[in-house]
Image (tube, rainbow, N blue to C red):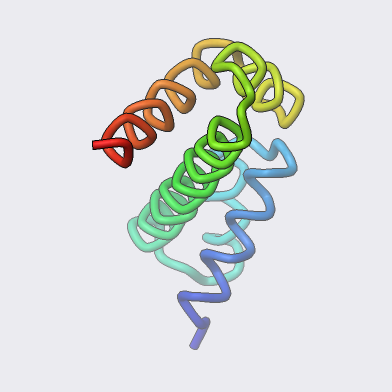
Length: 100
């Protein structure tokens, strides 16, 4: 039996490496993971990667970087401008809530 935590970790690494989601799904299915389970694993991995990115952007903002610089940093990590903007916006919201 394949370990779910291991599959999520592997999926996170594949996503960070730029592997397309359908390719990850097909890879896991070829390893014997059911298609629905493979989708659930990739969904969890995507969510964990997003959480990590928001925390990273939040840390950059706390260090005094501007939202634009935080977005550029995220783009250097492979996010599109739109994705970086959404992540930065979420981090800014966290920062403003923490300031309350």
